[in-house]
Length: 431
Image 1 (cartoon, rainbow, N blue to C red):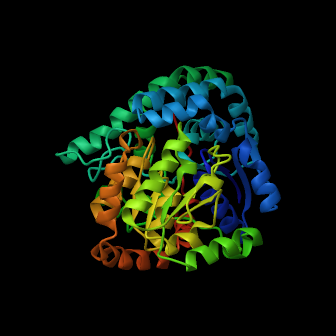
Image 2 (tube, rainbow, N blue to C red; image 1 turned 90 degrees about the horizontal axis):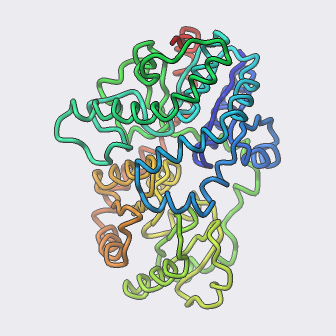
Image 3 (cartoon, one colour; image 1 turned 90 degrees about the vertical axis):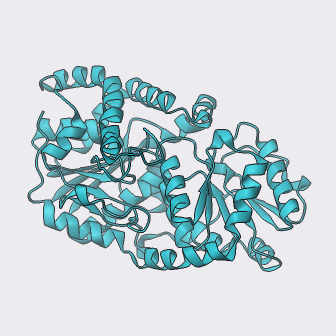
């Protein structure tokens, strides 16, 4: 079967779809992987496999000064407004590229940020469609609210479910003018009702690519929704440089003292890097421990020479190798980092900014294996208290069995089994 994977988002969104592409190809399918143009070189050069760019650079959007400002604000309304604006500004290239990627497909598997494109093309080209979620955006459930409505559970179950309609309505209202325009160009009728509601009513299969340990499958999701576990790229396809051990210098430093606190500032919208570095240094000093600061794309030139011996700055490192050797992980709360940190057996402090990040932070807090501090409320005193709470041995005892069960999950295999059950009967989207 010819299958097109329509992906969108950040690094943590693209890697699971890359894993799924490999899994499907091993089963004999012909797969077109399509996603943001900024991942083209990564997929083609590092993994040496074809990649179809869709006309947007997601990294450029998020790393721009404006992007960092609206992420740092943590404002959901602003997030939806900016998301709709970005889609509007790039709509012609995204529409053209998505259509080209699906030109000869027999099945579309779409990321939630590609649902409008995927569903329109499913209807126009008469191609069945399946939804693939890195986070629980659909279908609606009584178990917990939509993460863009609130990260905390609502007092009544029916309110949780109603929150999905509320968010869908707000998102679709912003998308509607562009969809009316494009559907007219495709010779389709004006959109009627909610796309997200129709996914449920038309029994379009949905794969949820996250761990059942973090989000058990709600009873009201039914047989066409599967919580598979996270999709990991099979080790045989991972390039050697990604499997390499930690830098010898860093490895030696780790062996010389107690497990450090990891601060993943590179994934956070840090507007004043020096203040964040000073806070990390002060926290390490107060707790009489060590710290690693992962700067990522954040500009921190000239800082390394001013750091004490107890603090090490790195640009990046293999999380699977580094996290088990840390005492606490402070990060942004992306789905990928949250899963990797938890699977390592190390508790997390999620400093969330937007989208699904608050949801993952609250999940860890509810399980008693992490804490959630929204980034706009981040302060030294709050971090200090959270770190002290998580360094309690009782937390380690709680996270250890969860980590063991997560390691035993084979999300990619579960996803492939689910697809084998439902791809032949998956419906074409209908307006």
